[in-house]
Length: 86
Image (cartoon, rainbow, N blue to C red):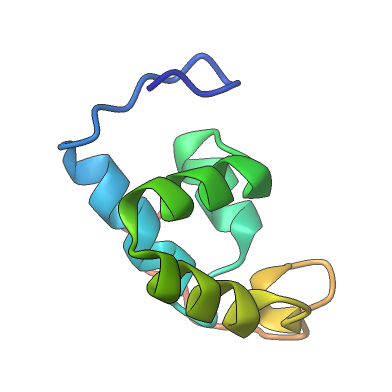
């Protein structure tokens, strides 16, 4: 799968699993996923849609829709960031 940033992801790749994990986390903003993997929120949605069951995808969309912590510009969170994170 080629994403807009020119980054190629294999469906079986560890990176896809990590992107899905980060997308499910309430306090990980989409901007962090974009920074680490070079993919925007719309592309994260496409990955989630193609890798989750329809009901799981709908549940995830309801969770993140309008959630302030998923967008760093609207979040007031000063969360600890490990030195191992980008």
